[in-house]
Amino acid sequence: MAYINTKLENGAIWYDTDGNIIHAHGGHMLFRNGFYYWYGENRTNGNYVGCYRSSDLMNWEFRNNVLTINSQNQPIRIRTDLSLKNEKNSNGKINLERPKVLFNEKTNKYVLWAHYENGTDYSCAACAIATCDTPDGDFIYHGSFNPFGYMSRDCTLYQDCSGMAYFISAARDNADLHVYRLTEDYMNAECLVHKLWQGEYREAPAVFRREDKYYMFSSYCTGWAPNQGKYAASDGMENRWSILLNIGDETTYRTQPAFFLTVSGTKTTSYIYVSDRWDGKDYNNSRYVFLPVNFDETGEPAMNYCENFAIDVSTGEFRILC
Ligand code: DGJ
Image 1 (cartoon, rainbow, N blue to C red):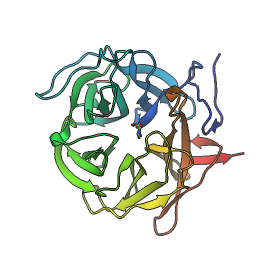
Image 2 (tube, rainbow, N blue to C red):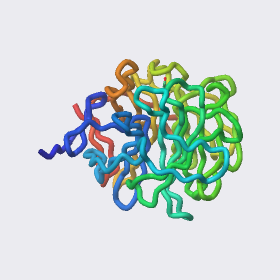
Image 3 (cartoon, rainbow, N blue to C red):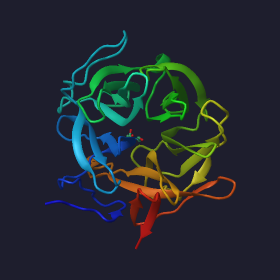
């Protein structure tokens, strides 16, 4: 039976076009050749990262589990740990959290970065990378490492219009948020350009650009429990960032940021906050919440809750429904 969504309900279980539950937690989207690819954590069975695609942002076709416990590996340099298994855990798995994928125009590769842990606790605090020639093929794992020796937990990627890309991750036991400029091939951190908000314990960073301003949303560090979201703004990824200001309500509507989706159409451009509503007791029961971000004339963002919505990719509208 084909499932066709004309509306989506925030916080409900969402199904792919085969009728299976969508597992793309802590995820990211990439637009390529007419399709939005949605990557995210899939912790079922031997899977790590699932990939779905859609041309309308409403109906999602499952494509592949692009990283699994059996993914092929290929070393790229010394001091990377290539293991995707941990025999000490009953399921034999490690953890890959918050996977993000960019396309590199110079190498023609899809490059994935994620947060790596040993599957038992959060002591590794490393990042991990993988690549593929296609958006939804079997990614090749290149291992985990600590960028410039730093701890690296919750993370995101951001690609500027120039092609310059950045990896942003929580360091020093989450106290500081680091911004690394990536090398041209996106396979390594080239330079640490910022240590942001020292001692503020920011998690779940997510970046977007609107006109000439860059915005970074993030949460505070409270495990799986939601908290007051905050944002900051800047004129450039390597320029000075503002202080942190509140966004949404005291639990950010029971969500934590995953990434931003920009949809430009004939009528408008929508900036969509895509987030996780985690179920800390039953991880696989975690849900998704998509909300539009509105801006006042000075560029200050605001976000309200809505229950049901539809996205129109041709007009660019995010429609709030009853
Ligand atoms: C909050 C992070 O944002 C999640 O990705 C996950 O690491 C949980 N903490 C684990 O408690």
